[in-house]
Length: 77
Image (cartoon, rainbow, N blue to C red):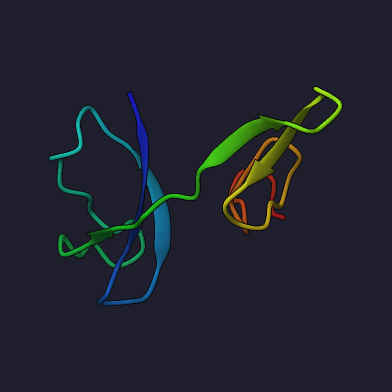
């Protein structure tokens, strides 16, 4: 099951939700609003440099070595 990122316009809370499919409605865990918006997730990519070595990177500034998010609810960075 995929994890989607959401933002609640009612209280401003950002959260992640494990859902069965992309059409499921998310409910804000902070205020209970059902009017949450799905956010565009940062993506991670791997590429090879001129020496042929695999390098990692992300669309955003990573908070963890294996995470492309700028902040992480799991590790607190």
